[in-house]
Length: 245
Image (tube, rainbow, N blue to C red):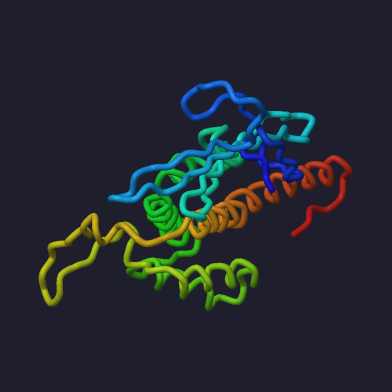
């Protein structure tokens, strides 16, 4: 698993938290590894168990405490990270500037609470990236992805990921404007219902990963390569050799 604080790969060495009281705060004769109670669902009481586990990040530069809660109702378990409340956003290179940087961090911040809206914002970033750095001026994200995927000069890994992303999602749910037919010049923004898409947390997080990969491909790597070439040019010039053309 990845530590939600530092994003390093760590072992899922979960340990149980135990309790010495019941759900009413009464002392119990022996430790309990889970809270056992029941809740009313209609006219029926349904058993509910709650367990808490914790671990310490093994990364020497982090060592934060992570707490996970597992709630089981009617034999259906559901788990979530209680500490930290939200995972820390991945480190974004300073070469990625606003509005891309700000929008990406916002999409990551709302990932846990609203995967759907996080995916909407991520896909808007995708559309803007393809327009700015791939000259994709087509209407709609799907068409812009089609153009990127069709260009074999781009890395196959990125083209394959975008191809899958296009296939598994409804791309009518990103920020876009559409001209009315015929000679009309008015534009109609999409409604909120058109903006919201069905996206799981995993799909929304994967979309953010693809955005980060494109940041590196379009922005970070080219600028770092250019800086390295300039440094090499200075060394060649200082050595009295002919410049590389």
